[in-house]
Length: 505
Ligand SMILES: Cc1cc2nc3c(=O)[nH]c(=O)nc-3n(C[C@H](O)[C@H](O)[C@H](O)COP(=O)(O)OP(=O)(O)OC[C@H]3O[C@@H](n4cnc5c(N)ncnc54)[C@H](O)[C@@H]3O)c2cc1C
Image (cartoon, rainbow, N blue to C red; front, side, top):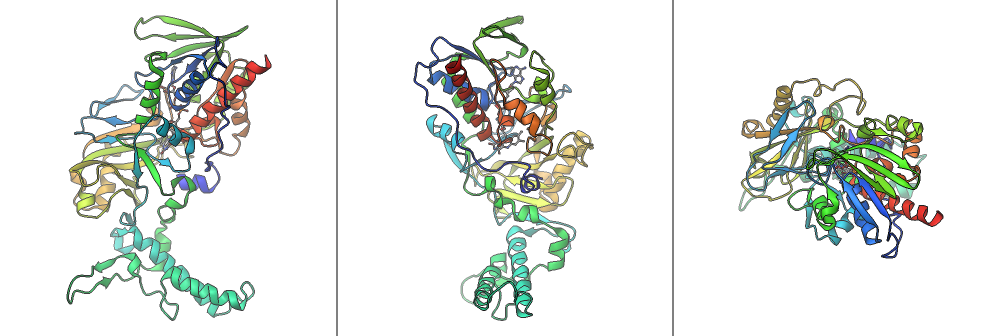
């Protein structure tokens, strides 16, 4: 789905240059900024404003920093808006990142904060040729390795193109010299024989591996072209081609929340947890924010010169604010994605029995994606993710998907079934599931705003505009919605806009 959206241009893909101005260390002295939300956008805003001498206060509804940048591990609670609660009791350092799980190497801003704050990173293995692809239409329904699908598809396409050239089908398009070069290229590209026929390739894996003495390698027969076309694994095959998913990708050692925790630590007590914002008002020379303080249990008021608001649009839409009617309309003007993730603790059978170390397998089932951990390879147990997709059609607000229509038990059964289909006999090893449905997570009420969708441009532009002394930040006012890089860049932009406001007033 992600791939489809990106190929349609519905999710922007490239990192942008930061708009952060170089401000002197006393630029903000005497000015107070109240920041709403301690997700990446709020924390980065506070971090940068403090460097420039501003007094800051960050109000956060949850009892932890990070917002969607969250890691579930032993002791974590997953609470839904309907009152259901799951408590994680995985062993040791096992964890699930229900939200962000990977950092592209081109996302320089967020990686820059990891470096600045000494957050240790490791490689996140996003694709592995040993992972599996399964469809009832391919190989009699038996899973095949990704290397087979990729290389056999390439082999067949190369053979067809060579045939087309041989039958003079491309004479108009290719000069004689280019024809020869193209045939030579196809021979290498598709691993064709000297007659430009694809007869299988070692690249696709072997039935029997090479050994000592007389034990020769035995190649696998190629998958059938017709079956490959019907099964259509283009999403899995091209997964790594998306710019933001290309190797090398990273992850913080121990879980994604290491980034917000490092930012929050540097901010210290200016971050007030358990402090949900209730009301926002503009005043003649600033802003007044009313919030509930879980310690004192009563409403509290803060006055400040400026407000950076990083609350999700799903939340802003429900709050008592004096944003203009145009902004209020814009809160409803962008769909919010309805993604979920399910993680299970399990012995690492995928490593021992299948040679799979990280990467993603695909199956054409209700739950279609199984993602293997990249951390602590070769250890006893790990967290395998089975299910990361939409719960509602139309990416968000539509009718339930097949998965979304199931009961919670049905969802967990579908998740287990995907693993069982890919790894027969091993589904039963999955234990202690954690299911995170982003639409039901309080203070998020959704996954991320789909701000590249057709028709969303006016709302996007409206939300990006400062309003008096309100400045909105958050990944949804960047062209990298759904990425922490976008949240950080939006914070830089808000800092820039406040600096500009001060200069002009
Ligand atoms: C399933 C999923 C997968 C993702 N994958 C990736 C990935 O692989 N890599 C990547 O970089 N990014 C990924 N992202 C995107 C990433 O999580 C976001 O871009 C980023 O975390 C957004 O930060 P933010 O500060 O804009 O918003 P948020 O994190 O939503 O922060 C908003 C904050 O406001 C707080 N809040 C809400 N209501 C109130 C209130 N009334 N009062 C006070 N505080 C309130 C919330 O608690 C929260 O802390 C993914 C997200 C999801 C959900």
